Amino acid sequence: MPEPEAGAARRPRKRVPAEQRRSALIAAAVHEFARGGMHGTPVERIARRVGVTQPYVFALFASKQDLFLAAVEEGFDRVGRAFEAAAAEYTAGQGPQGCEDTLMAMGLAYRRLLATDRDCLMLQLHSYAACSEPRVRELVRRRYAQLVTLAAELSGAERERIDQFFARGMALNVAAAMGVQELSVSAEWVSEQGAEARADAG
Image (cartoon, helix red, strand yellow):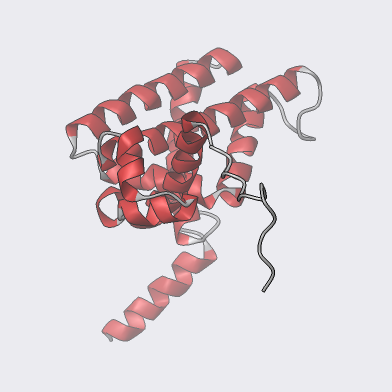
């Protein structure tokens, strides 16, 4: 076997900046926490997804809860960016066909987000479920309030419409999590499931 030439030492691995690693860990955390929640997701799984060690994760985030909070922040940011992009497109005359106003454009954008980014959807649900933890509850309350304020500012809609918008959004979250289009009593799947339940009970 030929000897390596002098000076042909291995090239050192390129050092990845900590901020870049941090962003990658948050992205991985969004994906993993969306599936297992805060308590059911091992930090080792997130570290492995990025290709770092668990101690390295804790060099950037003081605890698993801190990493979960960073992931939740990213989830709310995604929704906020979707609202802002939809409002800008509608204002520029590039909104979806048949869209009557900015709030409707934002609602359609949110539907698209739920359909294309299941991690964002499931992480939202896990963040609400983890609100028994004081720090999680404080963050979720603050970011939810910021999202409501953003929607009101972007759309200029009245308070009653904003309330309806977010109530509808919560219903869409539940429907999307179950893989159905709507939760209405008249929905076909409700009738079918109800009939099956009655047949099983009988």
